Length: 166
Image 1 (cartoon, rainbow, N blue to C red):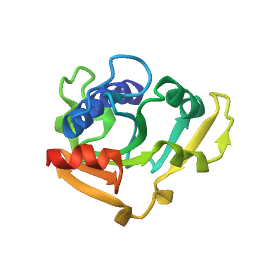
Image 2: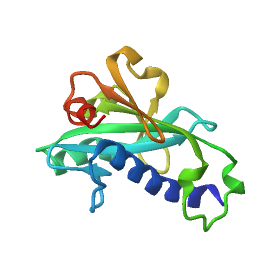
Image 3: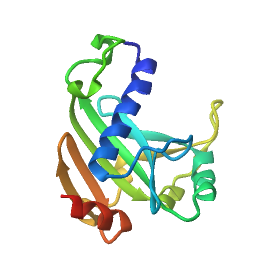
């Protein structure tokens, strides 16, 4: 499968997995990926073999809070590994979950991303987030669940919502 097609399909897969793990439904509209009456999560995924840097469209940083002022918003930075290279996965494969061997999501408060400067390549302004700049692991509550791990910010609404599920 070509990487572009794979990325689109695996993002759908990741949204479903995170929704199941957190109990927060996938949004039915464009914008924030997961949304309930209290919380919104925008997922950004990255195959570990490529890089631990994630590009975030700068417009999302301001637009999503304006669209959901009544919700607490989080970024969900998802890193995963596959059992085989993307180019060896059949284009019409129905369940990409069977190829995902490890997956973790680090949830960070929305405004945390503002520390990264805006870059302006031809494709639009981005903020490039590096996993090396994440807060230390002790600032998170780790939750092991079927198919991966969640790292929830300690003392957050997200932690309060999700921990009771486990």
